[in-house]
Length: 139
Image 1 (cartoon, rainbow, N blue to C red):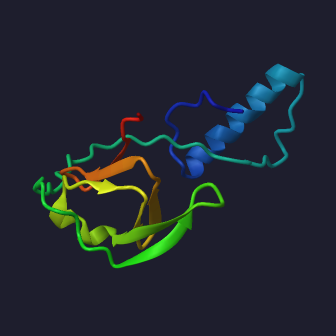
Image 2 (spheres, one colour; image 1 turned 30 degrees about the vertical axis):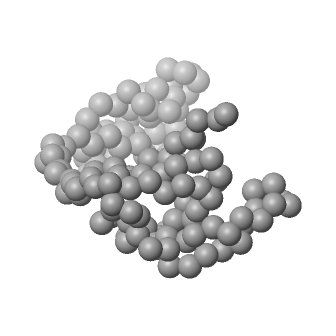
């Protein structure tokens, strides 16, 4: 691999330079090169650095209000035998009650994922709407 090239532009002149470096290294390592033959580039690795403006994330107010009303209930099992009647919450509706505790078993659904909260676990939304799940104290 030619991983010591440094900054070579990806244009016609840069590609000719890469080809020359390849043939030079091939000659040094193997004692021969075929400068009249085309080379095949199997992969490129590109490293880019650019300033990124700092993003400000909107915070939501932490309250001790009750969590949103479940949009339904679902029978679920964790051991294959015991059924739990678990509330199903829509995650987008939980942001109005950030800080309120949801006790497992519970299900939190959103368009791209589902969070399952087992018995003995509590979940809260933090001020950035992240779900923070913690195991409750065991007896």
